[in-house]
Length: 167
Image 1 (cartoon, helix red, strand yellow):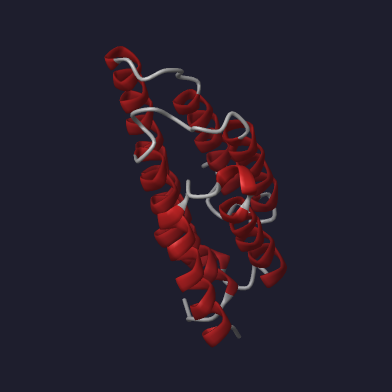
Image 2 (cartoon, rainbow, N blue to C red):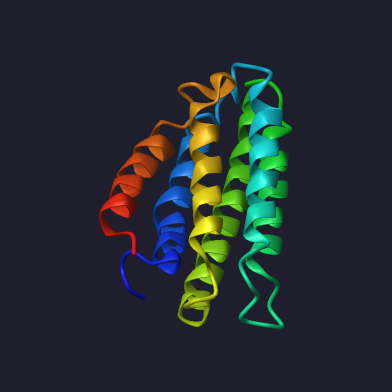
């Protein structure tokens, strides 16, 4: 895979954005989100990202497409999110949900990584621009200010690389 290709950008999503997203959620594990609007907004962004990933062809049947894997990831986010309060029991439940989310992130990342070689010339910049644009919108959403610091930094750094190397 060559740097500056859409497949390289998808790999950047896998390597830099997914881990940062999960790490930022881990920082919220004790209490969840402060703003009640945050939860449904993140869920909406994740669903929109899954819709964008529908454009990535399934090159490894019978395994499910990347978009289907991401939808499962989004469902695990909902399970992580649907814990209210900061009692020790709730913290423990959220920690277990976070572990499930992290495992799914790993499986999703492996799925994308295993598909990259067969995705050459099958992923376009329109899809990648939409994907990274949606991530950028989530990071900059007023209801989510300060929530996704690690994701925002990784996204900014990778966006600079995309501008530099994009073919």
